[in-house]
Length: 126
Image (cartoon, rainbow, N blue to C red; front, side, top):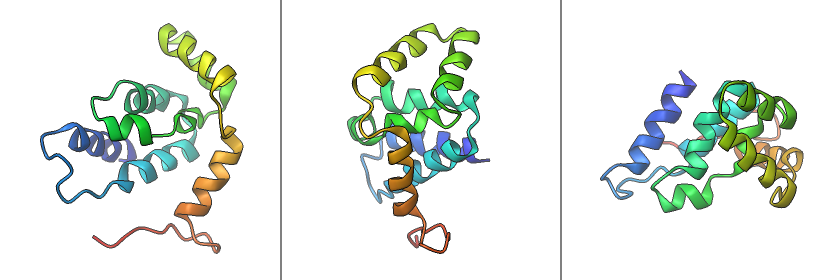
């Protein structure tokens, strides 16, 4: 279900709406929840949102750290073993040169942003 929501949010952002009634954080909170699940199979979906989008705001605002929910090595291994060699190479370079903040620090910051101190997911009312 989260994957469907994420895909729907990405399609909406890349569609003809041009940000009308923009609930911009929904794709980011969904990406973070996928990150927490940690399935390396989601790395391609998340990679596409960051690096293969036609939406400038999404390309700039989507944090590449979200791609690594399964962990650095596990994500890269899954990509390589499943034929995503270009993505694996690009993310390997990204880890060497652009991982700022570090994934663990990013995860803490995003958790603090989306969750209350007592662990309740904070969502804006629609």
